[in-house]
Length: 523
Image (cartoon, rainbow, N blue to C red):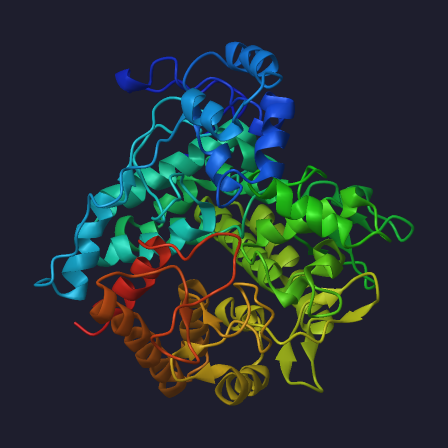
């Protein structure tokens, strides 16, 4: 078996003629490019949410638009909304293009949606980053390729036998790793600086089920690039400086990870919201509030009481103080995949190095994230030297990664059954704050993680009950409205889920993927 060596710093040359000239350096984020125009548009809220404007594409050269803005903004009767509409355009498809076929089964509906949700973008357009291959978008207003969403989308593509699209999206992620040395949250310039839960190794394992273990060997260099991103600076840590970027030095000398971001400014896509949140926390430096907001966005859980110091309000957000139990479980699996790839290459010393890292991470998760009192896994508050007390579905990830002991798995299963399980599936947390990653909402990825985690430890009946309730929740909305959506109210099945910085989105990629994968188990 040949080991493929790559020069990760070289320019990527696409063989696609469509892509000629399209894969140059990504432009700066819209807040950096547009200056006062950006701030005026976002702070005056001329659109329902902040993401609308940063997704628009300039209709002419930016320097001309900015010069025109400086001239026209001072004239009587100037209308900012009219100016933006005149000088920027949307890339979103028109509403109403797709209509659900009432004669289709839910599987046929999802299979048809894959093509509807597939995009091609071979040139940098506004904030949208060029990619060499087609990809699936979540749906609704989301026109980019999103990182952790796509693992759950791929589960559905596999169930639909759309393996070529799975391969193409993996190739896109390899491209992003070469271009940035990590995978951004999504293929937008305003997400450069943060990633998302690192599911790339899971994507490769999924493809390996179809094409064999050589997939892991072929992509080992990319796995190493992603791992180095998450572990950057760990050698610099010491007791007087125990945190750096995404790494934390633990009291026992091991390392755990946290969510982070490389910038400390308001998120461009939620600029006004972030500025207002910082104003609600005058005792803290705005830059730290912005960092914690960005870090929560990297987690995918934006937003949740999980990150709030007081468990209630977003202005108390402290994401960067927490060693995240889900992130560390996923990184354990990344280390496991790297070790396995080295074994396939007959490199036992390198394999043992990563097996040792796995061992140390597992021991730290069990030591710092497991609560014997509450019989559940929690995030660890590094600043206070103790676990948080927020019950969240992040606590099921040690089962998914098979880190938990059998006794711990039994206790977690009982907590899920007693505290989290509702008529429509699993609550994300046990508290209702109005945030979208809190009660009463349920999310497809967390249901997949819970079901698979329980199966790993033999709790098939509970896994099946969760699966049955979640499928019925999806079907209830589909029967009444002819669509699948981003998140669901699992307490009052049929009611619309709330929360978030934008309206409930249809589509919806990861919902489709998990549902399609679960339904395929019944055939």
